[in-house]
Image (cartoon, rainbow, N blue to C red; front, side):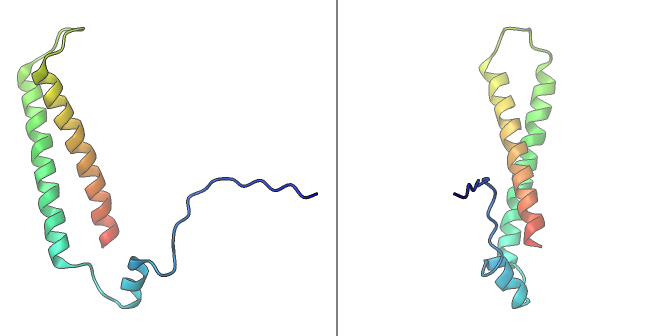
Length: 95
């Protein structure tokens, strides 16, 4: 009786993926896609900078109190930072 243990791991497709085919055909990602991605990154960067500036201009917040303004700007800052990070990784992998 053989006992086998399957350890879960990430399956990464190597053969036949779009990126592999593009490398084999020596093609580059579309220029339009790169422009759209760059515009998206600039929008996310502008949203993050504006949220940081707004939070700094609001000043310190007392412990235990929350206002919709602070919550909204904080959420926008976190969301734009995560989006910017993900788009940066995407842009690096496109190259």
